[in-house]
Length: 371
Image (cartoon, rainbow, N blue to C red):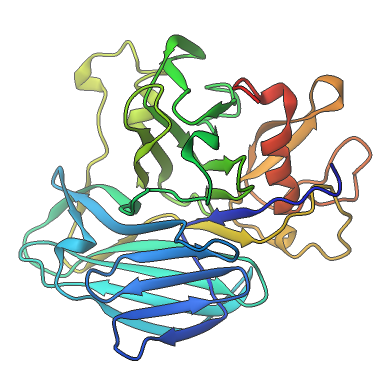
């Protein structure tokens, strides 16, 4: 096990890259580091995410927002404007692309920022909605990622080899399980599952898709939790079918989640959807989503003398790792702040993202799908 190699891609709302390059014909603008490449298409402003070791993009995506109960997407705007610059934050420094969309009649402007870190195999993405003028509008959700490629997620192996781990709203509701793609049962609420599979893998905060053939994975995780809830909807073509038909990540409110929990018995008039007035001249941003990619992962816990990721005070999706049956690791929750020390003799060890991904893929007690 210790010698086994696997591949992982972790994507978030911000993507960072070492170098910026523009195609000679001006059709594509790209950022690249040894692990990740992201390219912005001049035609519609969509971005492609590639992982070192895979021939085709892992995903191609656009952004959007739900305004006055109607969705508008970056592809609905005229040709986007792309600007590049340096950046530096608590995670490090790197290059970033700012992609701006304007000129859609009666609609707010959209903007997203992709960041790629120098010397680190991850980045982040954040979307902004700017109401430049006119009448006030109401904002219900910000679509941070809307996969539009075919296939929606390409990990270099057959989709029926994909497995999915979806985080929950609280640390144990619904209980965390690893399911084969398309085999997640219907969640009825308050920890109760139905017997039949659904066509939805729904997650709050983070979601991992792992392909057992290619050993590549895609990990999306909220990097911040300042204002919104980050909800992932991974839908298949039909219940029990291992083919992804849509994949979205939204910054939104809690109503969708709570309709199956504490307000499930409340009157419809009390199940109020988020409706945020956006005055002219106002800009509001989504949460950030972490992105990481690597061509190999060490499947072990390694002591880190100076754990750089552990020094952040952002809301990392940091599992509190305890011990499951037969000493197997389990995930018991999420916390705000630095990654916690490992338990069971690893008091001085900070979990690397590699180790966390390993836990999520291999933790036996959490696995309910076929192996």
